[in-house]
Image (cartoon, rainbow, N blue to C red; front, side):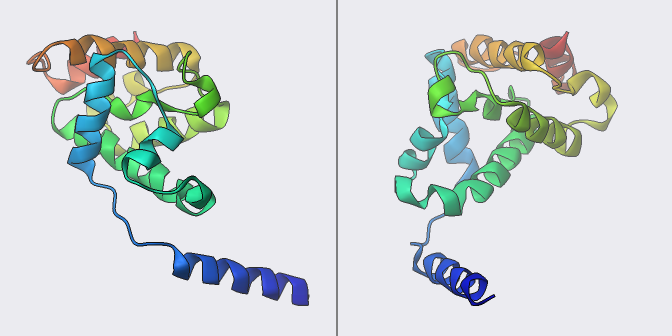
Length: 161
């Protein structure tokens, strides 16, 4: 019983000592867009390092990072951009762009939560094939200076077909 209390207090102290930082959605979109133009995936560690977050703080910030990437996805929907948050993957999967099933499930929930209501069925990400189609969409649309002026529902529906 006492060990649990001690562990909780140690965790609270770590949280208190965590330096204050903030993710910025537009900055993240620019960062991810620059990687998409180069047809590169971004690891979670690289993403955090971009914001000068030390690697040792990963256990404390990863829930915030996932939430931030969901907000980036929402921003992309609202601004007719490809879903750039699909480019952020684990370090050991950076060359292939693959994600664990757990990450795919989180991403799928974010698509349902933040995506267009009219295209909810066509924007589901259920497996790696769906994910790779969206990643390819990001690479193709980032090459141009501007994203093609299509209606956002058309872009995302095409990306999953």
